[in-house]
Image (spheres, each protein chain N blue to C red):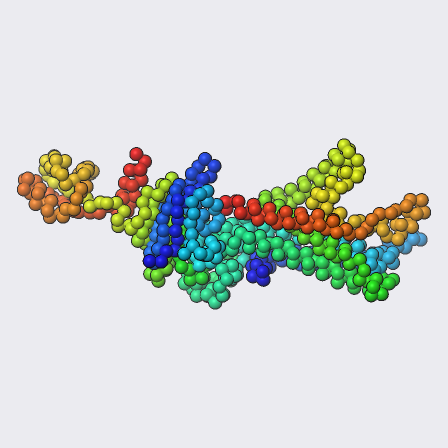
Length: 300
Length: 276
C-alpha cells in the first residue's frame, strides 16, 4: 500500500511543556484517519509540524516516499488548520487564484471547486463579508484546488452552527467517497466515528492508540441485563469466569465479556440457574466509551 | 521568480489601501517637477528656483535623487504592512501550508522591494531627464549622462531602507510598532553618534556612524544644498570656503549592500526559527 505520511518519534517541546512526545504513525493512501484527543493534546501541533509551520524538537517525518522536500510535497496536500486564513480584502475568487499560484496549478479548477462547496454565486464577495461557515467552505475549496492526495482538516466544524456542521460533514463524506485520503483532527468523537476508518488517539502529546476504529479496544463487547432476581444475577455474574467487570446502573446491569459469548448462550446459562431475564442485549462500546476507557486507563 | 512576484502582486494590488499608497507615491515622485515652478518674490529680489541651476546636468541627478529619497517613507509603510498583515491575517501560515517554502516567502517580499526600488529609480531618472532637458544650461550628451552613480546610490539606498523595513516587519509583526521602532532606531543612531563625538573625536564618531544602517543609507547621497551655485557664492562672499566631498563612494554602497544582506538573511532566520 502506498504511504502518504510517515512520522517517526516526533517530539515537540514548548519550553518545559512537551506538546508532542515520541509520536509515530503512518498514513496510507485511501483511508480516512482521525486524530482524536481532548483540547491541548497535541493534535494541532502535530499537524503544524508536518505542514511546515511548527519546528520539531526531535524525530522526523516525511511525505510520500521521502524524496521530495516538505514544501514541494505540500503542493500535493490540501490542508486547513484551525481557522480559515485568507486575505480579508480579496474576493473568494482572488484568494483562490493566489492559492493556485502558490500551488503552481492552473486557475481552471476554481469554478468547479467553488460550485462543489456552494459558493460560486458569491465568488466576487470579499472574504471578510463571509460567515464562518462560508469561510470554512471556502477553505475546503481552496484545499481541494490541486485535487490533493490527502486532505487534512483540523477541527473543521469548530464554532459552526448545526446547519454549518451538517454541510461540512456532508462535504467531507462526499470527498471521502471520491477516494481522497483524509486526515481529520477533532475532539468530537461522533465526528470521527461517523467518517473515519482509522484513528490515532492522543493524550497530552502521547499516543494511546493507532489503528482501525473497530479494533480500538480488544473487547468482546458487553451484555445489558435486567431481571427481577437482581441479587442472584449479580452473584452469578461475579462468580462467572466469563465476565471481567460487572456494574449496575439505573436498574440495568452491564457485564463486560472476557471472551466471545453470544446473548442466547448466556440466556441459557441464566435460565439453568433459575434466573429469568426481562432484558438482554449484547452491545459493543461506542467510540466515546472506548475513548474514555482508554484515556482513563492511562491516567491511572 | 516571476511566480513569486505574481504572488506578491496579487496580494498588494487587490488591497485598496496599498494600491492608493503606491499610486500616491509615484505621483509624488513626479511632483518633483513642480519644484521648477517655485518662485520666491521678495520685493526686489526674485528667485526662480529653476533658474538657480538646480536643474543643470549633472547636478540634477544629485539634487533629484536626494529630494526623491524623502518620499521613501510612503513605501516603507506599505512594506511594513505587507509583512505585518501576513501575520495578523495568519495568511503567512496558510501560504506555507499551501506549499510556499519559507525561503520563497522571504524572496517574494525581497523581490518586491527590489522592484519598488528599481521602478522608483526609473521614475526619478525619467523625471530628472525631462526636467534637465527643459531647464539645464548644458545638454551635451557627455554632460547629461555623467554622474549617474547618484542613481545607483538611490537604488541601493531604497533597497537597503526597504529591506530594513521588511526585517522590522518580520521581527515585530505589528506595523505600528515596527514603524515606531524605525523612528526609535534613528534616534538611537543619533545618540550613538553624540556619545562617540563626546567621548572620542569627530573622526571616530563619523566613521562609526557611517557603519550604522540608517546613517550609512543617508550618507550615500549627501545634502546638495551647499553645492548650489547661489549658496556657494553667498558663502564665498562671507569669506567661507565650502568644500565637501559630494561624490558617491564604492565603500559606502558596499556598507549598505552588506546591511541589506544582513536584513534579508535575518528575516529568513526569524521565519525559520519561529513557530507560527
